[in-house]
Amino acid sequence: MSSIKDDFHDLQIKHWKSMYTATLKQEVGKPNNKITEPDQDSKPLIRKVSKMLRDNKNMEKYYEPRAVSIGLLHHGRDKFSLAEGHKLKLAELFITENGIDEFGLRSKIKTKIEGLKQCYPANDVMRVNINDESLASMFLIDGFALLHYICYASLGKLNDLKKIGMDVEAFSQDLFFLENQIPYEVLDDIMISATKGGANMRNLIDKFINQTVRDIRGSSLTSPSPTSTSTSTSISPQQQQPPPAHLLQLLRYRLVGDHDHHETGEKTKTGKRVGRVNDLKSAGIHLKSGREGSLRDNVSFASHWITGTLTLPCIVFNDSTTPKLLNLIAFEMCPDFQNDSQVITSYIFFLNSLIHQVEDITELRKAHVLIINNNNDNAVAGSDEEVARLFKEIGSSVLDSVPEAYLEVKELIQKHCEKKWKSWTAYAFNNRFSGPWTLFAFAAATALLVISFSSRLGTPLNLSAK
Image (cartoon, rainbow, N blue to C red; front, side):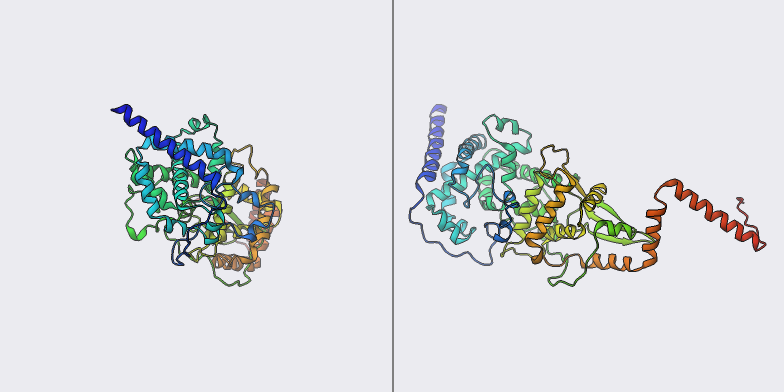
């Protein structure tokens, strides 16, 4: 009896493989089904990165998938033909290990296919020109492969995937590209259908996303994310984010925090500017790294008697994190991004306003606001000079389209700098008393002057303890 069941399962796997291979070879030129325009009140579309961002040739590498195509936008491209075999292998492993009813699940996806098409711009669906049967297969193969990779990454079993010839590092990077997304609804349906460990998959996704946040922030999460979609969390429905449109949006939820509609600035520019990092340093303003909490909450300024403290969230720049940050910016800049709070874009451009020269990057790194390389010897952001160049390219791409942000913080910094005596005092201490011995000598000389002045008035200063 069991052998008959195994034979039937093998036939199912062969059916998936033959159908998916036929999709890649035969879809071009076929007439497409009718496409309805997406509902404008629906989730943000999975779309191409804006031409404004892609026009910079140095930036294109951060938006173009390198090893694998996931979803509709790059489906069928010869560039990703090798990865298609890897995806099929991952899908086969996932089906076997998780007790998936392939045919039942495929029927369910087919009933939703019109709605899933509306997750992409209509012209992209027409351009790829794929029929509903093949589209359902594509969604499931990609969903199986994606979930299998995430589960293995969370369980520390990625070496098992290397054995089938996968470039796991490239796969990990590609799955957070804006153009490489599938509707999260597909992943939900797959997890619901899994008879083995389906409930635990949500916890594994949470673990995977939390690890990605740690990679970006250079910090550790000590408690479950308040935006977790896992059923194991005890957050009230009012505190939870709506279901994500895709994996990239889920990552953004975790980075930004649970209250997404937070004003980081105004929609109109006000001319408020802060100086470069070294100018702030000359005015007695010190940088402090805020590693915990969301990107939204960690920008603040406190003015003290002479000095000031600018607290900024810590960000890691390396080959893994830089593409994720830039694709999050691309997502926030989409025309249908349903939020007036471009938190990640605003923060990166706030940093950009502080950076004029390589020395500014150096100061940010010394304060642990920027972490460069993060022990990654092959990182693209391998030096202060390269990170400074990256910020310059980001600024030249979209600076004029970013709303003014963190106005309250900028106003506080400006008020601090307008008090010239603070700047003069800070300058004196920074330039005249840079070492501990010169500062000690200054204090001793000041004490002698006070004693001398006091004795001349005939009231000797009693320095002895009572």
